[in-house]
Length: 506
Ligand code: ADP
Image (tube, rainbow, N blue to C red; front, top):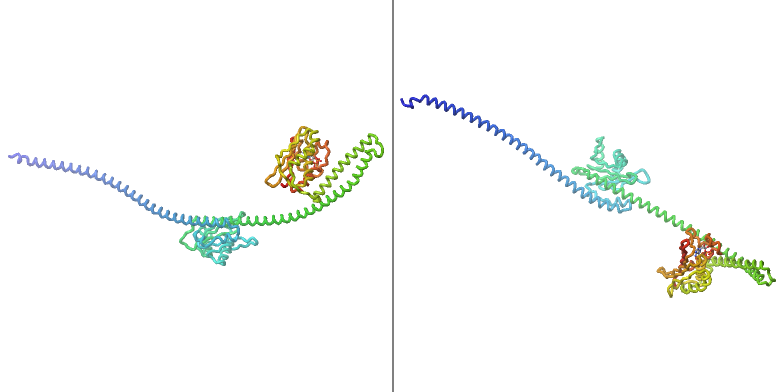
């Protein structure tokens, strides 16, 4: 027996058992591989799911991008339209806001503007000032007749009356229409496929409306369109308000001018009357003064005869009384002479002899003449006029009186130790300005303007002591004015007073 022959069944068994083992191992391996594959498939499926979701997301985003792009495009178009509308609006605003005539404001709005605003038709109407009716102010794309029909339709339509004319709001064909039929009816009657109606407002509310319509149904009405119409209507309202104000101002100006003319006439008449009265007053003063002068001269004459002892020696007491009669007669005579002078100058009866006057020389002569009283009162007299000094044109005698009065007053109202100064200078106004100032008692603010009035004397201690008539400054003013000059006064209590008068240069 060979080992091979001997072990064959065992070999087969072994082979079979090995084969079985291998088969089992193989099966196990297969199962393991399958399990792994299944896991892989699951993973792949999960991946695929993720990919699908990502794809869907991408797809959605792509759709969104396309949609956004479309919307952007539309927005761009609308923006362009808005910009062009705004440019037109700005141009229109500039034109109408500089117009002050109501008719002209509406005439400035033309068809090209309406087109640029994105519309085809326009109508505007405003309330008549005289009645309750309305008038067509703009008819573009409509005949005047048709615009009239549209206007009558709008002003009687409850929707327009309520929203536009009463609540001052905008009304558009895109607004919700409760009734459902009204807007299509309005559109049909206006022959448009969309419209915007905005109030034309003055300060007190709507006085009319502006209607802009579009025939094409391809261009839908936007909020921007509504805004443009609203702004345009507001601008028209403002321009109308300005025009109204201008007209009112013009009317009140006319009225004022008329009143001024009337008042001027009345004042001229009053002035004439005053002149007549003034002349009568002058005549009266002149007549009375003359009448007084004659008896006064004889009183003085008789008093002198008696005083001279021509009628026998007088007792001392009688002499003193006669002296008083003389002094008082002199004062009365001065007063009468001043009054006569004023009335003569005022009525132009004094003939002025104009000649060149050297003001410095005149002041020096005055200083010489007043040297004794100045010395007696211990007053310094200063002539602050550099030689040769200005030359004025005037009547020597009259200007001397002005100087005597002004310096005389300074002398009276300046306490001992004070100073009186005369200045003169020629100014660019062609006048010589002469100032007499002192360091005296001054004049209170309340009295300062009155000192030129006839018979006005300030109520002060000094005036109770010194004599005076209150006519000196009135006379001075008349003389200066007769020379076409002016006199002014400035003063400070207890510091001093300055009188400045002007005379034409020679
Ligand atoms: P009169 O000197 O006779 O009183 P005027 O007409 O000359 O009359 O002056 C009117 C008044 O103005 C004076 O009474 C005086 O009170 C006031 N006045 C005039 N000049 C001066 C002056 N230089 N300083 C203070 N007061 C003055």
